[in-house]
Image: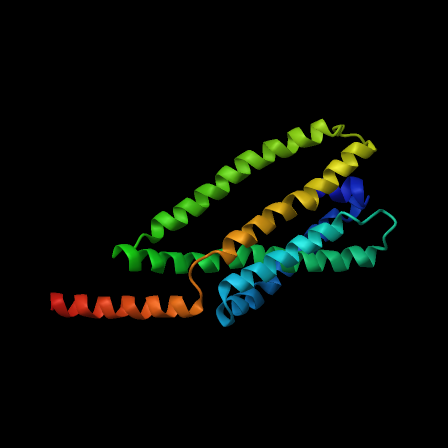
Length: 204
């Protein structure tokens, strides 16, 4: 994203403001996405939020240095809304999986679930960061050069928009296949509460 700001839209002097707008917006919008995940089906909420983020990223690929800065600001705010969804909604699905696992196995494994997700994130970072460098090198990116070749500019555009967009869409497909909707989750929770009451009476 910093390469995008510097070389694609040529607003390096505004990079701090741009990054701040994205992440401050993301923080401010967190309660909204929390409310959405609690008020509607979590799978649908995830699909809407992540699709919104993917759409914003694709729009970013069309931005040029000639675009007015106010348009960049609007896109930053929209990107922040999408980033907020990406940080909240996946975690809202995880407790449902924990409850479903207890329903199936009779034991709770919260630590295992959260540890696996954290591990997956670290593995993803360890893979994607070096791959980004390799991809930029292949496209002809010249380190510390003020002006980059067109191939490098296009490579940065791909990494900002279409590439993450594809993976976000794949995530949406997996989310929509998630087997627990709101009604099923409510049924599971009620069943677990019934089991716990029966277990408590048996130990009394």
